[in-house]
Image (cartoon, rainbow, N blue to C red; front, side):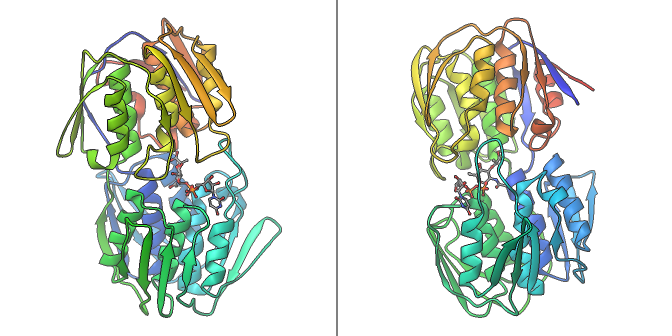
Length: 417
Ligand code: EPZ
């Protein structure tokens, strides 16, 4: 298993590019199941979750070709299988995103239940309940969700809880349903809006994406399209924090600062010097980091996918900050690894109390999930001596060549194969 070794102490300086959004590319790839025409996606991030999705879609009968210019050609004139097998789903929960499109296109879907992951139980009961409201017969047995529907019927759906992939699954399913679907308490994430924009270009009739009420009028079929995936706001936010913690002078390009409103606001409150200009975000030196409390919320609130990276920053801020994790019940796995590096953190249920500033020292640490591994990289950039991060396969799931990007702006980081 690959490891990353980081020697701390360098300021990050220069220009670093944000890749396309993982959490937008995955549903966009699944949406290609909805049409027999070819779909072209641009700005696709070459991260392991995109490669796993490619494998899954190929198993369903789709041709999927990635090109060096980060574009992807996806085409499935005829769906040959409606099963998303356990072997693939267990490696990537987002595989559940084929459930809605498969059901809508073929009237049938068999998808392995994702099971829990490091950050929480993460059930898909809300996806299933909503599909049942659209008239699907759904049963769960032998670890699989089996769903059948001759044709889905539009309906009023009220999500008990805001769910990103749940909203995306139903958005895709409803595009080919008979009649009107209204999704209430929907997720408003930029990735949901990006998917709705793509589906609209395919001929879907959607209103209200980006608000908590989305209306979809079903159509008989969808056509192909070309769609550019939005920038990855979580990768962009990760670079903002890497710049701020190293007192760096960093320009982050091909980003969309508007998608990081609450994160940028919080970082400024914590003393970071951040400028934005179009698709460019910059961190300037001289920020005086100070403690600032945060609560993770659904968009447009502070993203839970930025919480771990923010915790690393707060270890270098003067004062005591309280981090409330409201979305996932077990998303503090990185805290104990940061404590191994000398951080002063106390966990109290869904709250983490971080006292800074403490000098971190390099150590061997283990990544437990995607964003936890990003926080360990950030901590390694300022730690005294070398940090060795194990299980970086977690990082590779959602960050494209992160060590090369960070090295290009001055980090001392290398991958040990
Ligand atoms: C998406 O996961 C993202 N993944 C996650 O990013 C992100 O953390 C999460 O949204 C929240 O922003 C992708 O887009 C591929 P949810 P998702 O359904 O859709 C509960 C990353 O680091 N819930 O919005 O799976 C659930 O347990 C990843 O890139 C139910 O109870 O998250 C959680 O507590 C990690 N029943 C809450 O809702 C359901 O049926 C929000 O989960 C569905 C969700």
